[in-house]
Length: 354
Image (cartoon, rainbow, N blue to C red):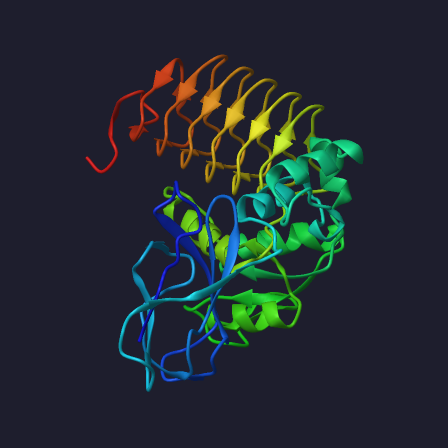
């Protein structure tokens, strides 16, 4: 029997496989929860239409799946493909979870107007409780968290989280043996397989310890995977950094010691604002970007998603840097830089990879 992706709404032909609750070879009972899938508007549970054994598992958590495609196959059940039984969950939508993380809101306190929590419900709750972009940072209640990645950036994240009151249970990293010390009391506790266990144990917050000296793609992929698994990805601001009035920080954004962000700045999700960065008023930074130590971005600038601005580089007033660019250490951006451009310190540039 094929268990296939149900259609959640008429306008979407794909869903996100948010959670995979079974493994290949596992026996399942009729009605047992197998998967959680999400559209942009709803989260749904996929249950086994009959008892059997998972003879083949084709779905992967964090991946997109087309409506009608096979999630898994059950042996010892009826041979004809059938649509899985689904039940609309009262859980918040994926976009609602990400928006709540951006604003530092605990979803348990958000009351939905409909059957599930939506982005509109989160934003209405924020407005009613006076949770603006800056006050939301202070409203996050520190608790138990895991750092994903075990390199130098993980140590820097840990150093920033301790004075904020977070209890970091450890790091996960497939490249390092369990028990390896990252810094002082912070140790590797396993690889990615440990994350599901931590979620089950109530460790629901995760911070990325993956850096991005020249390429932010790996960090972006880890961020999306953690989001799909259901981890909260809070932003944080080091106690010795400053965030100006009217500034918005996206989910998972990290602001380190000595950084100064001016007023009316918009910073996307999963952005590293590294030590000593000056990010001036009315600027914007796209998702998964990295502003390296000592970078200076003047007022009214725009930095595209996935871009790295190198150490001590400068972006002059009103300049625009496209997506997935690399601005070398000490280089200066004087005007507009297109997507995918590598700008060298001597002012020459080329498409990345050339």
